[in-house]
Length: 111
Length: 116
Image (cartoon, rainbow over all chains, first blue to last red; front, side, top):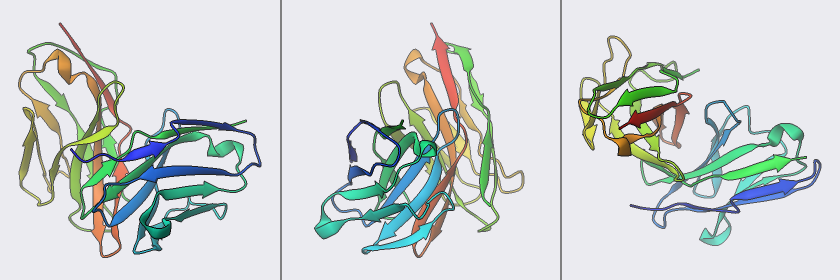
């Protein structure tokens, strides 16, 4: 079936640094999403993105977070600056309508 | 807000036995959300197992089935006879579809181990 790719699979950075997580969504999809999963907890919605704009974001989507998809390339999640509580697995998803396809996740560790 | 409560793992079942993983939901933002079961096999990403977008309907895939019950706000996952290859983590999810796209609320996941 359709594949969503995420790069990198793991990222370790020091607190206060900037990090960019990359997502290569399914080619004809229109909606893009990020979810966050802290170890032992459920996956939680961060943001969805459509037509170049953030459509909806949760309270987890802090001011330090931003998303973009310049010129139909990667859909990115940038965190600047990072904090210890940002350590989690971040999942990207894309959809044409309501059925979301997920990437394998990027494990982010903030030291 | 919207939320999902499901059987949390681990769940251990012997091969060829029946399985039920419970899921109940609470939807505050919409009367009739879309309901999903996702599965993550070892070493793989999350993938859709089945979906139902209409209350009262049943979804099925790979021998699994789930019925959208709006009276009991439940969406239990069942299989009559499991196989070792069904060992995975199963997530129930509620989806709210709006003009701005959709967002999913997930349960915590149930890790199923099928023993030979």
